Amino acid sequence: KASGAAGSGRVPAALNNIVGLKASRGLLSTHGLLPACKSLDCVSIFSLTVSEAQRIMEVAAKASGADPWDRPAKDLAQGPRLPPSGPVSFRFGIPSRPFVDFNSFGSAAQARAQQYAEAWERSIEAVKAIGGTCVEVDYSPFQEAANLLYQGPWVAERSSSLTNWLNADAEVVDATVRAIAEHGQEWSAQQCFEAMYRLQQLRLEARQALHESQAQLLLTPTVGATYTIQDVLADPIALNTNLGRYTNHMNLLDLCGIAVPTTFASPTLPFGVTLSAFAGNDAFLCDVARRLHGAVQLKVGAMESSVQEVEKAVEASNGKYYGPLPSDVESFEVAVCGAHMEGLALSWQLTERDGRFVRTAKTAPRYRLVAFDGMKPPRPGLVDASHGAAIELEIWELPAAAFGSFMKLVASPLGIGWIELDDGSRVQGFRQVDVGANSHGVVGVGGDPPPDITEYGSWRNFLK
Image 1: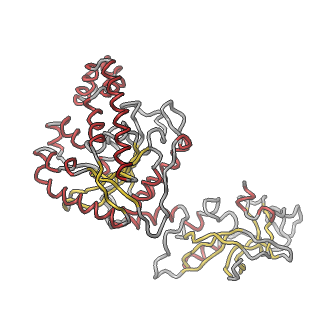
Image 2: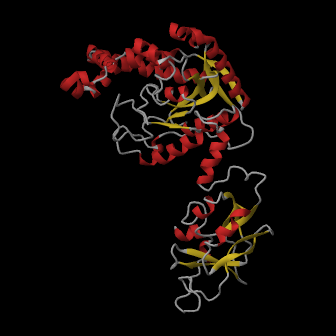
């Protein structure tokens, strides 16, 4: 993770052909993070795909609230969403042309300026191809806000976070970082307030710029140049400022954003864009970014795998279905109604055999559900009954070659048999096959019978 106050969660992502997600400020807790600029710090996420980044964000966001600067999801106005599939339409804004000049990133980037310009144009077309309508926006408030980060009194806040080190032994602080922090002492309290007033005006102007163009999100290059290590060492402050041209404004203006690879400027130079919107639009940006990243047909990072292949592998490892098994793999469907359901205690027996979750379903109303709560782990039994009910279950797809090893793990009194679904179709799945079993699943030794839990309608409801 990175503090993301400027662009450390998006710039490295762009340079390495991966995804960089900077959630709304405060959505991910900064508790325990060494501050760079405490009022602006924002934990960022690196990942190979948008799906992974979004999942990490959703899990991590649950812990927000442990730090005074945190801002849990319930405190943010949530933006719109896109459907997971099918045609969509949305409007995206791009900076007016004077603000996207790839010849303005210094002599060290001059030789590659035209390649970057062409990559930017290809990226715009890629966003249009997934349903976006492009409009130009007045980028001046965004650019002015970006300049405030290092050319305004916010460097005093950076200086504050380093005070103890600077006072104890200034030499332990990186020379470039120390030079920036030392400028923080040049700002008066009055200048700090004046900058805050100006920033508030810029926030209003930025909102107006997007509102007037009816843009739902802003699209910019993530970086406008790539420099060699030698270039940066020779002029670290100027070139790092250039790298942050399209990222430094985001936390000051209270935006969330995600950096996504879209093309290559040259065979060895990744190029990507950043999608941004005002705080609370995190999920919406991920919806757009996921479609974009999947459509551009790139390999991920430095790997040979495609976006789709990585997403399928990640989802399969969590028991989710993202497309069928390969066409040359013979498979069959199996219904599960208990501990083998997605995310429950025995689902690993399916996923480690390349099982794929297909869909949820319900039985015909002719079954009852009992709980073998003495088994380890507990699991239910599905039994025929004259006065039954519809029971929720899941349909999985399993390679036929894995059936034998899977069946070895099925414990009495359960087995595989035909189950009728509520649509009249039939599928093989888990049923109680040994009658007379007690609540521990043992047959022929007496003991308490398994309790009837049909009223819950599903094993998940019973567990709750």
